[in-house]
Length: 324
Image 1: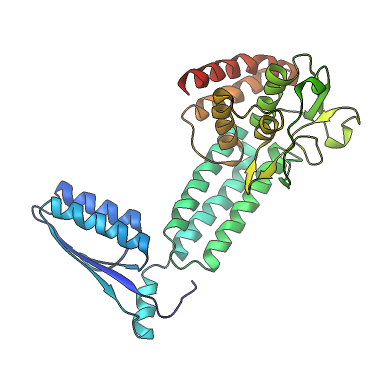
Image 2 (image 1 turned 120 degrees about the horizontal axis):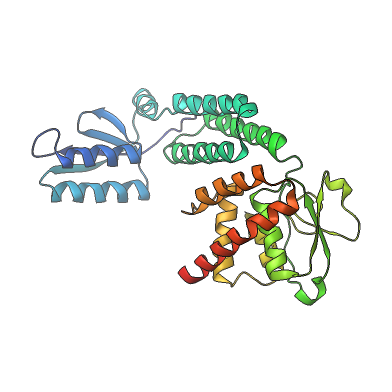
């Protein structure tokens, strides 16, 4: 864990009225846990000083006062090195990172017996846990980088098993294209469709090129020169960084053909991004992923899968359009 000298500290002392098991005491315990405070003793908590930390502790002090308790919020100056070292030690997250890294390593070892939907769901859970831990890591160092490396290694193993040739995002701006120039074309992507590819193929067929023909490639190298490739490295449409944020192929297609203002498609894009690379959770995501996994297991090929999945995507689009 990296330490920094001359740290200012915020110290909160709190005492609550009522029984130890009171609702107010439980709420206080949960609030302090969510802030990741260091505990000096019962009722005395400490955080590195910052505007955000002061605002959070001020709000907590106000809530305690509402419940009839008493608080003092004090700012401590920089402490002698030995004291500072002890205070910084209260925020050591190494064991938490090690536990999370171990969970990632364990999941990598379980891949041969798992299905893709279940694996990616567990990856999102691990991602959420990592984000929450990093939020509480006031002195990040080697353990955080080790956890991030374990996460990257896990995603690599998942992609090698379930999505060979998964595209890497490229830098650059997306040009707006005319729909009339993309009618009756051949579109190609990697076989064994999953969330981003099946949603992108549906988008092409429903909103871009109603007469589209699709090729499902064993390898991106098999893509014909006259076909419009999507969702693989070097394809006409694939993952890209737009204004500093990674966008999945579905989102790149929306931007390319001026479809981003369609509220139903924008909401569907949020779902696709969440399931493909993470992002804002969408309530319907787990159900969509489970149904898609069942459809893929029951369909003889990708043509049949796109036909089977299209009514599901149609229904989500209608729902999202009405709810927008």
